[in-house]
Image (cartoon, rainbow over all chains, first blue to last red; front, side, top):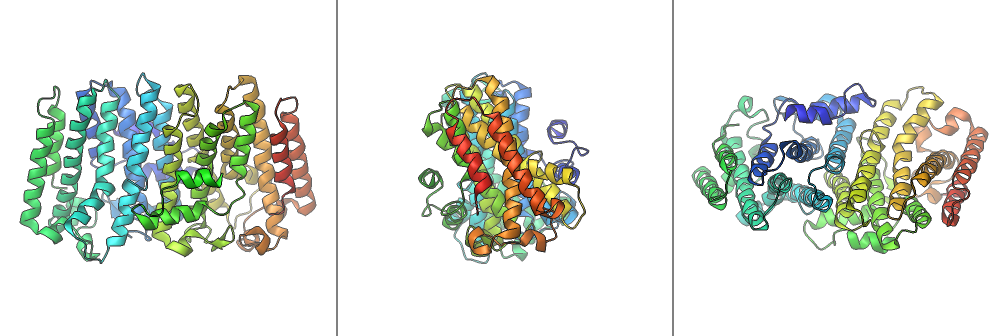
Length: 280
Length: 280
């Protein structure tokens, strides 16, 4: 995945150099690549060509990376550490970080439009729509807006879930769906894959909250305990640690159930396991 | 055009409401709509269906609007007035303005992927690529990066031109090309339309610099004389007013020459005239 991302990012010696260096800094060397791995795992279900899934996976990861760059900026979360390195605006300044996020988003759509991802161009247009819906004001960016509005406010568990379904869940669903759409998709599979993705996406966030409340900064590669310090609602703060862990386990089971019976589902099962058991 | 934009922007009463209100604020009621008008004028050359050009025009205008929102932010130009109103971050806060720009960009690609713009889906994918190339780090956003790097630095006329070709020229070219691509495009026309668009795009910027140096804020709807105050290089500061006016006139002539002999070129000719003769 690193090679794919590196190949499709603009070279650091092409003008404007600082912008391109900063784009590469924000994307390469770091990140768990959960979304690309999910895209590949879903692509196995539909027997998609790996070199097509690669592009879809890279596009989703670029959207994710852009959201982190903008989310870390002082106007938003004001975070200084990401993937064990200074955040993009700390390293390159706020103006460049703003343009980095903007340009990474554009590059994601550029990739989806510039490479053959499916023999059916109409299906490929549909894939672009999936990514746009997942990323925009009714998806990821909308989730961030809800997140902003909920800082320091007493929100309920359903409201927290609504926020995460948008903020992180939408893009994780897009990763699974885009990977699958690179292959021969059986319409009956879409709903089940989508349910798997919803469970895994929510579980991912619950585990994130558990780790944020318990793991040290050195292991996370980002500032630990920051949500609590920022007075942000989390699954742990609303449910307690024990209940949060039990919710994660139950989402894990639901995810596995959704893809039970699919051929070639081993990697999707492994991804569900990884998302629950990860320690960073 | 206002109705098209209003229809395709998320309604202000759909959650997240503040984000959607701010997106509408940033796009509606204001703006010269030069890019949409150019898309329509180019669509006449290829006899494109107006309801298709509408979508392409809206997508380009959304990219333009997103760039203004981000460009006006304190980390960039720190401008407080745009289209006669407080800028988006002044009205809604920086965090929301950041998400507004992000979401408007996503919506632009969403529109191009969600509507039929050409009977040939492959051609439609190519259109998405055109918009992405024009907007990204080797287009508009790259131009802004070069602009940032040139504040307070003595740059030459070719460097200024290189910056503007990216910062404003690329999206104006995309507007013309996307409008034309909604219809039956004769490959021989593309190069000429592209040359027209390059001339008009550069002329637009030269006239912008002339107006910035001479027109009052009340007429411009944005802070006049700001480039000079910010020590930004302009055509007027590098060439002087007389030479800048003569460059604009010569680009105007070149633009008209490029489309000479095209059928249905009246609106393109009018747009070239408007861009040179405008007073705001």
